[in-house]
Structures are given as structure tokens and as C-alpha cells.
Amino acid sequence: MRIGSGIDVHAFGPGDFVMLGGVRVAHTHGVVAHSDGDVVLHALTDALLGAAGLGDIGQHFKDTDPRWKGADSKRFVRAVMDMLRARRLRVGNADVTVLAERPKLSPVRDDIRRQVAELLEVGSEQVNVKATTTEKLGFLGRAEGIAAQAVVLLIDAG
Ligand code: MG
Image 1 (cartoon, helix red, strand yellow):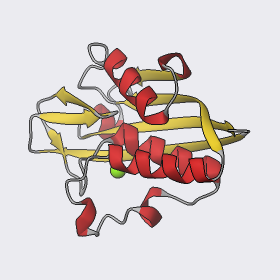
Image 2: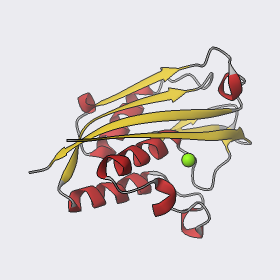
Image 3: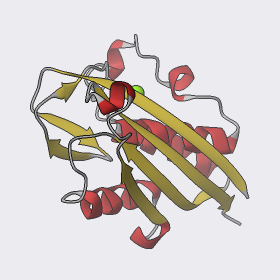
Image 4: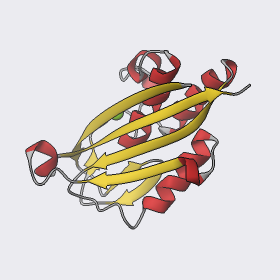
């Protein structure tokens, strides 16, 4: 078994939705990002890479590479899942925390859970999605951006 963690932050900018775990969530702002700025999938990608000992998302998908401009972050997760498969590793479970004052996660939490489970090739019961605010403290508390943290366990695919 191997464990990995990941964290990601994006600032809010112009727009009317944010991508969270591959799910489009209506919001008063978008995020500033080279790709689609999905903090959940970026944190998960880093957690997967970390667990496998494969570095970080910036090494594999450079944020200056035109290939990833506006990219659907599901591509990053799928590419890393291919790397894991080649190493005979699969996901045991994943636990994600979204940190933000807004948007509220409760209406989309199950959709995110399902989408992330599909990407990680596990059942929904192997994925947990949590949300917290920072009690109005700091940049997240001032609703200047959104952050996510992910922890994943990889197990031997046998
Ligand atoms: Mg990111």
C-alpha cells in the first residue's frame, strides 16, 4: 500500500462557474488557471503521483505547455491512472476536502463523488468528498479563491 497527498489552490476571476471534480458548478466567479482550474482534480492528480512516487502535476503537465491551455483536468487524472496501471497499482480509496466559503458544495457533492470514482476506476463508496470553510479567515475566507486537498491510498493490483 502506498499513500499520497495533494493540495491545489486557484484564485477566483471572471466567469460564472468553477469545475470541481470534473463537475461544472455555477458560481459568481470562474477561476484563473492555465487549464480548467479544477482544484479537486489537480489535488487528486498530485495525490496519485505522490503515492506512486512519480513527482508532481507540474512536472508532468507544465502550466506553460499550450497543450494544457484550457484543458479538461480529467485528462490529467486519466493520464496518471495509465501510469499507475503500468505499475500494477490501483486506487484503494480517496478522500477529498474542498476549502471555500462559496460555492456551496452540498448540491453537487454526490455528482463530484460519482465523477471522481469513475475517473479513479473505483466504486463511489471508495471516494469521500468533504467541504469546509475557513471561518472567513484568510484568502479563502475572503472568497478570493478556492482550494482542495486530497489523500489517496494505492494498492497492489496483483
Ligand atoms: Mg491547479
